[in-house]
Amino acid sequence: MKKLFISTILLVGLSMNVSAQKHPTPPPHPSKSELVNIKSKELDKRYNQEKKAILNHPLATKRMKQDQLKALNEKYRSQKQLLKKM
Image (tube, rainbow, N blue to C red):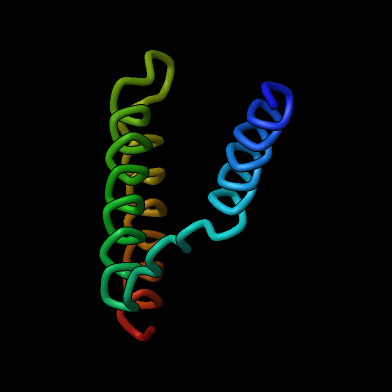
């Protein structure tokens, strides 16, 4: 009787554990505007990091920094336009 009781408890416990693992809740999918906002924030963060790196470079001359910043601004502007088109 004792073995039957223990095996029944064990079987119920394992079946509950297995059934709990079968149905994980799917993660919520962000909307299109949320995705665009996330990508825009990542783009702004990367732009600011690159700009800071250019401005703080010890060996670059003023003219080199201006050229690099101009190229960075053009790249940033084009990527922002692509995000707005989405």
